[in-house]
Image (cartoon, helix red, strand yellow):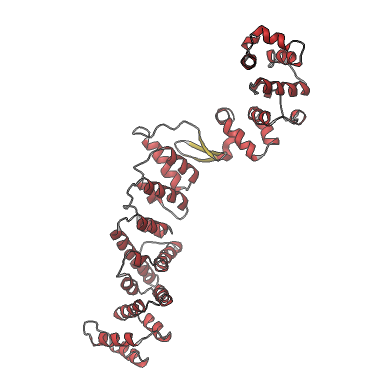
Length: 397
């Protein structure tokens, strides 16, 4: 075989800027002469460990590749040939070694670098190695290796013909919270029609849903048609802040908050009566509704949204624990007007638990007493005699 046919020899010609004869003469009677002889027969000879070491150094000297010499290295002789090479040799040689060596002697970080570099080769020849790195498999297989998503096939450009496969994969990845794949797909394709995907919200995919929402808001893609109640029921309260921050559809928010308060109130009533049939909500979903209403109160979202009727809706719901929480919040903020209004609403809706709460906690002010007297005198309110007697007994009248 002529030296000219060897990639390594051609690398040397370029490095030394010599003709073939000049280079051979230059290497004559030196250790490199033996290296050239090895390169001519690299696939047909047995090498000692010392020869492997010298040849590795020769490759670095020639700035060539380690593919051929790597075939002479295995788990049995690796320790003997793994001497103190320079960083360039260590890095480049590692990429050409076989998996058994990498798996036996290298760190997890180095293993990941090797897997990324050799991904296509492994996929075609030994895919079993990649099983533990498989994130998910839908229309395409997605692997997380060295912090990057690698795919078994090249994804097509996102267009009409490829839309369904890529869209379906993104949809499935969001639903199953495969966040690394979600980020990869969204960052590598310009989606403008994925609004329906955020309605895949469940109680375990918040991270993926957040990423999609941020993509939609950053790209000014309208998503105020999302299933707001589904978000809340699954505990994803952040959605309301996104609506507020982006000045989205306040009317929809008003309606949905009111509906959620009424829904939770109905659920609590119907829990007491098994004869009622009602959509089966889990205890966690009911807890999320409760916590969301509490979240509205704690973060003054009702004031931010200028929901002047929030107090009235909540008092009408008869969710005593939350009404008391609302009352305590206003007391802590010294908002006497709201404290008084809560009492008036509760009296109007005959919520006696809250009336009792005000009485036993000495929250009845002279102002409340004056307004209560007017309410008692109003025939339209029809406040029964028992309530009047109760109020009179405790000094409210």
